[in-house]
Amino acid sequence: MKVKILGTEYEIIRNASVEEYPKLKNCDGYTDQSIKQIVIPEFVKDDMSQEDLEYYTEKVIRHEIIHAFMYESGLDSNSEYAKNEELIDWIAIQFEKLLVVFEKVGALTPKEIVVPIEIMKNILEKKYIRVCQKTEDVREE
Image 1 (cartoon, rainbow, N blue to C red):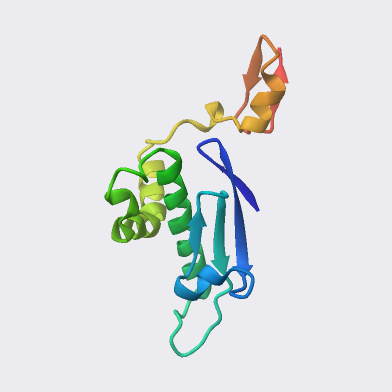
Image 2: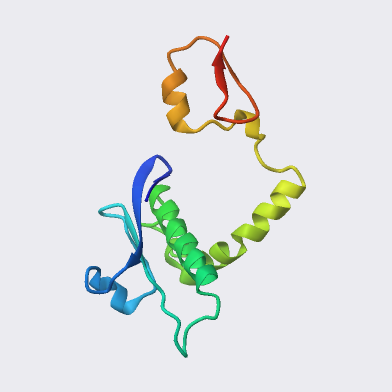
C-alpha cells in the first residue's frame, strides 16, 4: 500500500517476513526514510504476544507513520524528541482519542474544503469549481 506523507509517497509493507526484511529481527516495525518504506511484520499469537494483535498492528503502523511525518517535516535530524520512542508511542496510542475529541468539539477542518490531491490535479485547470460535502462530488460551474 502506498500513502502520501507530507507530499512524499511511502510504501507500507504489512505482514513482512524477517527473511525478506532482516531488520525486523530487532523490532516490531521500522521506517526507512532513505527508500520511503514502512515495514510491519505479521504478528503471530504466542505466549508472550499481546492479546489483540490487530490493535497492536494498527498501533505499530501509526507509530511508524509518525516517524515518517517527523522525518518529512524536517524534525528528524536535529531534534531529540523526533526520535524519542516514548513520545512517538504516546502520539500513536493517543491519536484516536485526540481525533474523537477534536471531532466532537468541531476543531477539525470542515470536510467540504478537504479535497484529495488526485481530485485537485484534475480540477486545477478549471476556473470555477464547487466542492460538495463528499469529496468525490466535484463539479464544474
